[in-house]
Length: 330
Image: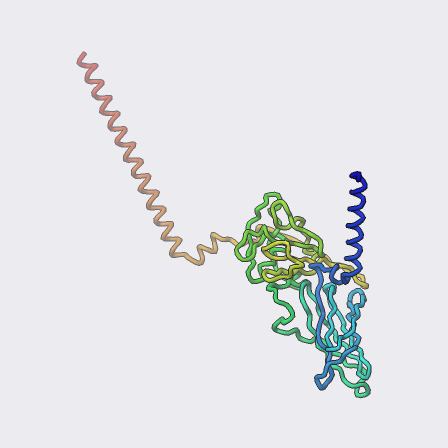
């Protein structure tokens, strides 16, 4: 068999296997990324019984994009691969009034839990819930980490205008000096005492890790970041690749309404703290003692120097007198 024929058969076989895998594996499994969230929960009636076959919709309030699913026999539903943002959740079931929940926020790498309670049809036409509080303990996942929201990005002060500097708000993360001289202004942090070079970093699910020296490959302006999540421990194997931590960044996207933003950045030496004056005002006695000791030391050094010069001059004078006596005797 010729090498070209063997190569063609191997290529055909591999292509066929990939096609079979694509057809058999669910699309949700193929679309696993590190830039989405999940809305999940259990639909029940007023008596606490589960409601199977209920239609659950999640509508993005900014873009109008809709996701829909149906509850299982146990009343459970899950909407995966949800783009982070604010959503309105609607639940409809036969024999029940329509349920609407406003202000459901989905964050990157987070699971938002919503358990609708349906009321019988006829008593009310629609049940609207606004601003439902999130659970204090997340029971749907085991990873450890946190999310830096858009509100924090817009209002917290950052030295250097690097969004990654806010990662220190997540327990276990600390700032580190840049280990790459070509990226001195890029925020560098470590997790759990590591060097910071073993982080897996994604932007909208795409790779943004510097595989040469580690850390962030391309920095992004804070105006272009919607939010980011930092998972420090026990994160999913689907988002692994690095043993240190997972930094997942979501950039801002357009909506149905025209919007924009503007910001100013101004820094001047006049606004800096006067450290010497602050120290003098806070420790006047200590600084005066130091000044007195420094003055005494300077005077002692000057006195020793003068004494040395005086002794040298006397030696030279004695040498001159002895020389004159020798010449006169001759």
